[in-house]
Image (cartoon, rainbow, N blue to C red):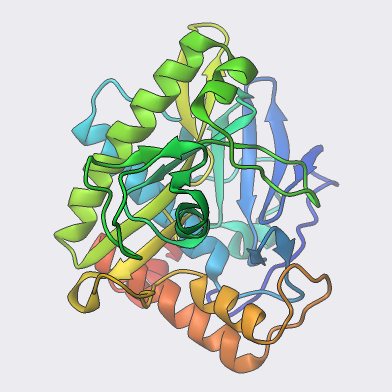
Amino acid sequence: MADKVLVRTDLEHALPLVARGKVRDLYSVDDGTLLFVTTDRISAYDVVMDGGIPSKGALLCLMTVHWFEVLSAAMPNLKTHFLTLDLPPQIPGNLGELYQNRSMQVRRLEIFKVEAIVRGYITGSAWSSYQRDGTVCGIPIQPGLQESEAFPEGPVYTPSTKAEQGDHDENIHPERAKEIVGARYAKRIEELALSLYKYAAAYAYERGIIIADTKFEFGVDKDTDEVVLADEVLTPDSSRFWPADTYKIGQPQSSFDKQFLRDWLTSQDLKGKQGVKMPAGIVAKTKEKYREAFEKLTGKQWAEEIADKSS
């Protein structure tokens, strides 16, 4: 399974398809349960590349489950949508090898229409905005910062809209997020996102990785009115991971995430273009970076972990 590339799922003979996202395909298991299948697709600048990264889906899925376990242990009141890595009985046995470890059953929630982005370091679009007018998503930031520097007053919450596939997410001010989801939910989402980031950043730093920024998604359990952590969590797809041992303020950083792919797209004038096929070297390097991040953060060797989970 580890070397197979799955870019499109086909389970509609067994389960109703709910949605296809940039990376995940969602199927309905029952009235209260969804099956999240993480494919090997990869997107950059809101565009899905042609082809995929071998075993990326399983890696993202297992890393997310690792974080659910770590964060739930540290924050006992945290609610997540995760139920089990077991496949539902509707999935035929001959498909088990392909879908196991890249799929998780989760609680069906109403997902908030904002993405909760937390930035600990000034980089990417935040750096561009800061250079232009001294703000990040409309939030004034103290002058004199250098590229890749940690925000001196702590991580900054900068939500974005949650765009439909094919559209672009839009960075918004936290006040705009209140208008979208309501002030009470917006406050809880912001508090949770900042708390999760702070704990995860400290955890990762002890393991040699700086989490420069990350994106969380939350939903609401309509029966309990609880805000619930959902979707993927703290993966190379949803975060910027930097090696701590080479970190240097005042310049771009090397990374364990898809920044490598973004840089290649930009250098080839392919940023935001459809139908881009990644060269073998880019695929191999991205695969290597993702696995290195997994092993540093979990303390497990990828080959051993996937073999153990598949047995």
